Image (cartoon, rainbow, N blue to C red; front, side, top):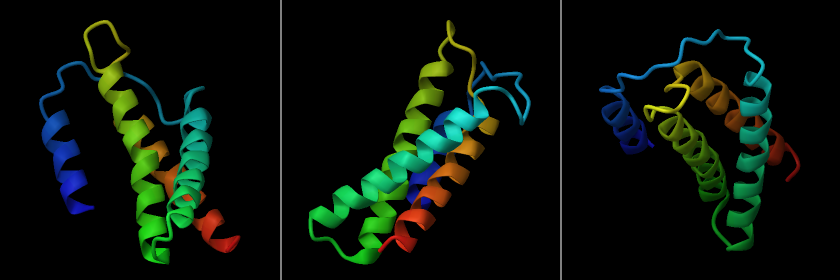
Length: 106
């Protein structure tokens, strides 16, 4: 997990194209709910691979965040809307919620 965070920080520390959005923009709910669904789906996929419970949780969380980080990398290109740490924060919150809900259903 620390390695993923380090990679994201290193990749994005030089992002010159940063979005000028606010914390409650229209797309924030989409980031939150899609990350929650992806995290729960990733955990379920991992469970069907007979991984341990901890591995299921980690896989679901990282599976979800990989889409969020990929989307922000796509947005950070010159023709995109810009890298948004706020969007990524909503992605992390959604992934954590999806993991928690998936965990409660077990």
